Image (cartoon, rainbow, N blue to C red; front, side, top):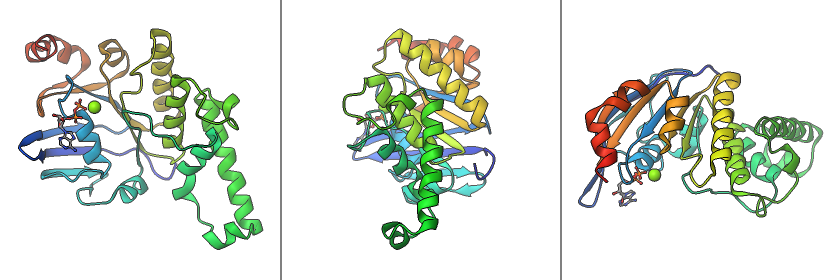
Length: 255
Ligand code: ADP
Ligand code: MG
């Protein structure tokens, strides 16, 4: 890890798509080293928020600062370079093995140039070996080391989800954005993933912003919760206070 976890400050972020306000002046702060949940009904704007934070979408208004630096307008690779890594709601993996996918995560950390890598110069070979070693450690941490040299295609849904998280961790981020990491999993897989997310924070010391539908998981894992509905922030606080909030209850029961 290059630097300690830092504060993410989202202030008055607005995103408009033709005729639709997907995010309407949304503000929240992710404290360093915390697990912060972003929840809300379908279409509330959670994935849009992740797309703004990772530079995929540009906000129409407001500001996003990480460690005091303005992220608005930065391209995705620059934001990743500042230590913010993400996973997608729908799994996005490349063909090839688990190792191939994880080494893509290490790509931005490689210092050897294309030529020395292509010529297999000793320095480049040593560096590749170190990256592979670290990728293996991260695979092991996520419980997928046994599949390290296997193709990702035939792996179970849960394991492919883990490959995606491992690839994001291979970037050595300070802030990890997880978009619905347990969607499509059975109750046993959900519990295992919750334990993994808790372990990532505890052992790697990074902050995690997690989009999650499973209230039980949010209550178990999160230090703080922000609730969106129709692009607006309707609640923000501890899991306990948010769960009791009448507007939150109405938003969840009203659909
Ligand atoms: P959530 O992740 O909370 O379910 P999204 O952020 O995916 O919600 O979507 C919020 C709203 O923005 C939805 O109405 C969705 O249809 C709309 N939306 C998201 N992305 C786009 C886009 N690229 N173009 C137009 N509308 C979009
Ligand atoms: Mg979504």
